[in-house]
Length: 148
Image 1 (tube, rainbow, N blue to C red):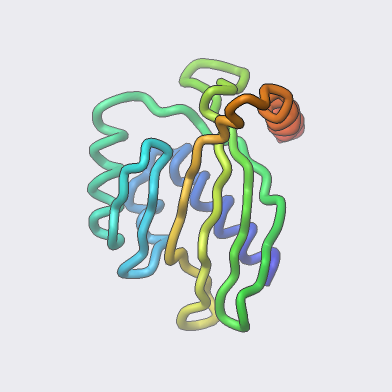
Image 2 (cartoon, rainbow, N blue to C red):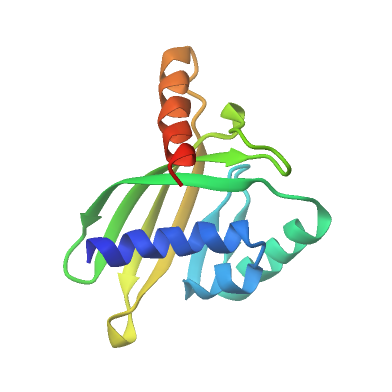
């Protein structure tokens, strides 16, 4: 299960990086929900696809670099992966520390033992008043970027 869930998260961010709203939305259940970095909510795979098509159509987006820190099983047919992510601006080669995030999703096992996303939440990693935490996270994500 652990590897399947890690691959699901990797495919999610890979479809973002490829600017492919259909591939991104296809990873969700029919009624799946995504909560974006700015708090935008899209409910249902169709709404998710349309929301991302609008984003990708209106401006260049940064590419994700991420590390899944934990995959926590929730019973036999659900799991909670938790990850950290950073973003490399278009044309850039380094992270924008102001775009670092903590990500979590709820994955559910569907037909044919496949996993889909019920909820994806992308929260800014602001660490108000704790700049050392921000610096530590940026260093961790730069290691991921360097070795990817």
